[in-house]
Length: 235
Image (cartoon, rainbow, N blue to C red):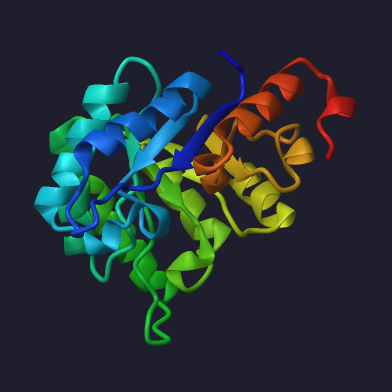
């Protein structure tokens, strides 16, 4: 097993009539088991998390756990929500199913809504005490804005059940500033772009939706990095 970790926001499979295809999902997840890559189930985007009912999400989590648990990491990535209440509900659904870690986004910033620093702190101080379970926090701008590194670091430092931080779409300076502000050990995950140096600067893993298509290529990249065969990692 490679020292670098990788988590993929996996796709969700459906039948032609629009219903969830659990058998196809189990077969699809075997690709990640074979490549020894972790999975985030029920994500927005590739995972169609915004389109599914609670019952469908529950089935996705349970099918994924039945297929993957004990073989690769199995996490949940509930899509960004409009309120702390909805975030808590989505997180607890995943926890009840038995996933290992739940990723939590900041509150969705749609219709040009941008929370103030006070509102963001209140959001984290509402959600995180209610979700007493290993969680990852995401600073991704896909929620509609960037969470300031100071605010994200405050939440990580205050709530010890935050075990990971997921960074996509942020600058290297953001990562470095956040790393300096976080005063305890957590795992930082970054995209593959520029990861040759972000891994060297303290990140421990990769976030890669592209691994839905090329899981073995990502496995090869991680193995080469661990073996310090950097000259073979280029195109």
